[in-house]
Length: 290
Image 1 (cartoon, rainbow, N blue to C red):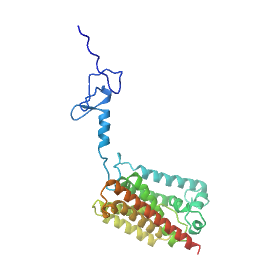
Image 2: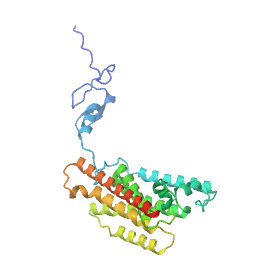
Image 3: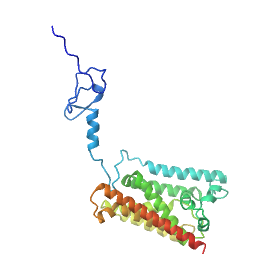
Image 4: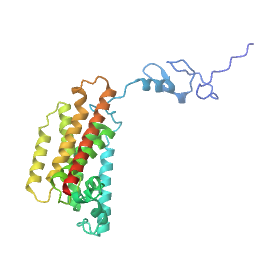
C-alpha cells in the first residue's frame, strides 16, 4: 500500500493542515485566513491586495470619505473651548464673570496694542475665550450645527484648517478696524464655517438661500447689539468663504486634471488665505502703534 501524501498546510500558518484553498490564488488556507466572497472564498492576502488597488471614495473636496459620520474634530474643538472656559472660570472663581480675575483671559484676550508689543499668541488664543456661559453656549451650539456637516465634506484635515484660517481672518478684522476693543470668542471661526457651508452648498448644486438668510440675520444682530465684534465676524466670514472657495472651486477653474493636483491646489489656497490674514494682522499691529 502506497502511503498517502501529507495534507497541505495553510500558507500563513504552516503548522495547520487544511483541505481549503483560496478560490482566487489557489493557495491552501485555513478557515481563519479565508473570507466569504461572491464566488467561493478569498484569503486575507488577496483581499488586502484588492483593497490597495481600489481607489478610496472621496468627497467633493478631495478628502477621503470618513468611515463614520461622527464629527470627531468638531467635538474636539468644542471640548477645547469648554476646557479653556472652565480654566478661566476657576481662575476668576466665578462661572458667570470668568473674564474678571482670570490670568489666562487677561493674557489671551485680543487687544491690538498688546499684539503690537509682541504678544502674537493673542491672535489665536482669543478665539478660544468666551465672555460668560451664554456666549460660550451660543458659539458651541452654532459650531456643532455647522461644523458637523462641514467636517464630513471637507475632511478631518481641511476642516480644522478652514476653522483656524477663519479664526485668523476674524482676528485680522479686529486688528485693523477695532483696535481698542478687548475681543474674545469663537464666533469669527464660526462665521467662517457659515461661509464654508454656503460654498459647499453651491459646489453640491444645492440652494444656499437658507444659509444666506442665517448669515444676514447674524450680521444684522452684530450691527444692532452693542458689545458684539462686527469686524471679527465679517473677517472670519470672508476668510472662511475664500478658503473654501479655493478648496472646492479653484482646481476646476485652473482646469487641474488629477485628484492629487486638485488637492495640492486646495492646500495652496489655504496657505495663501492664511498668509493674507497674517499680513493684515501685521498691518493692524503696525497701525495700532502709529
